[in-house]
Length: 280
Picture 1 (tube, rainbow, N blue to C red):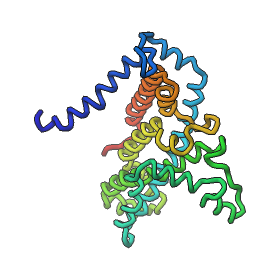
Picture 2 (picture 1 turned 30 degrees about the vertical axis):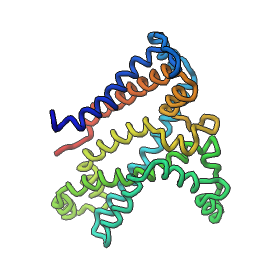
Picture 3 (picture 1 turned 90 degrees about the horizontal axis):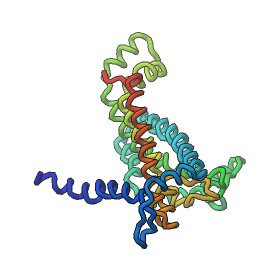
Picture 4 (picture 1 turned 180 degrees about the horizontal axis):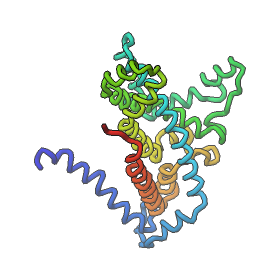
């Protein structure tokens, strides 16, 4: 217990206790200043009856469904490339992982500049190719896509490292046997690599789903949930309810509804992995 204390005490004080306190807050009508008033489940009922909750939930689901394929396919492509015997591959592994340890505020500001509709690098390149130049984070139709691009770029390195570790754990004799049987590169990928990579894939999917539902930093920096609420997400709404509108009870209730949603999705994933994840 003595050696666990440096980690256990901060965990209890700054994670577990605030979580339990938020349950109590979700049952109160509280503006963070005056004395809270007990309202039971009224905040939950209000959140579930509010049409904007479902619109914001749709934005969050749209973010997850756009982010997940990009980050997985991109991370898998990088892992496959950097698993080959390439010159300076250790250097490239470090370079591609660097965005993962970079501050989200820095990454979001850089991507906000890159996707600037008037003088951004991306639109300049698209214009040079004669392609349409979207309004990106200033356009309701493209704001969420802008956040997805920035998020996928930052997290590619994390997915790459996890999948690369999975690739390196696959026995080489499996590929040799497949090659002797006449399997080409595509068939080796489909019938050897992807099935044996399913444990790493499952881990990446679970973590990416949870991170996707909890997206906030990049949205706050790049769009503040706008324009016209087109990129507002659930955690952003929790923040706004609590600190902008002084409705801490509603914000806490919405955060616990989000927790239950993430828990449900994770349980479904844990049950479903029995059918497609191969550990041997």
